Image 1: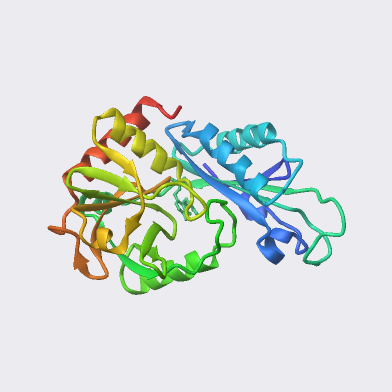
Image 2: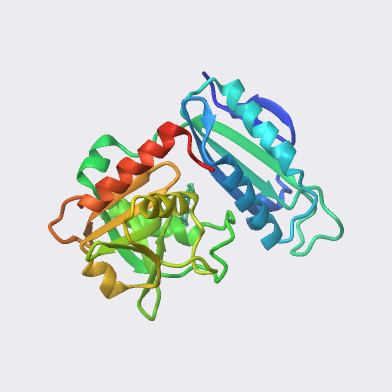
Length: 284
Ligand code: PDD
């Protein structure tokens, strides 16, 4: 088993992969990305990830990318890696050229795919839940586009780690909570699951959608409505979703326990339902 890269259709060991210093992804963060994972030999929710990638490319007007070729290269890179449970990262930049804010002419996008072992959430984190901190929302207004401009997310997560927490949840000036640095956010109050609605304020997480579907199929009331800081702090349960961490209970916010301070029953149920979907390969 080995880490593999594919740069513009050429496969190689990850450690040997190179990108031009003139690449706009490197110079300006002028690029979008996707992170998919595999379970036991199968890429999970691949169609959904490719559709979001298409939307991200459209969102920053990168044209001329053959997503069928990207799909084929993702699958081949995964196969070459030999890993069962892998993380497949795809980054598409506007291309390489002399540094200038606006490119002089048409560019050829750079397409990077990497495959590495998936670590996922630790069993103890799933069982006992994690702590989050609240941080000011400092990101740009199009958070629905999965761009590689992640500086606010990185600084927020660094702050969380420095305080011994797992994630940082962004709170806007007017007290709304949309998501965390690399996960979507859900609350449960009075038996009703709630997550903020899709729109420019947050990334439309693939896991978020799958978990909402799990809830609705199981007859658990689930709504997509704004979540205020107060609603978050007074929720019966809080959980995060993301490709590698799946469904992860939040038991402390800024050092204060969420309800009883343990992973709640609906969070556990949704975690189990999500595992069932994964085991069934049900990602359509
Ligand atoms: N992060 N919100 C943000 C800001 C994210 O970066 C992510 C994923 C999510 C969850 O989306 P999904 O369920 O599709 O993974 C929500 C990826 C994994 C990353 O940046 O590594």
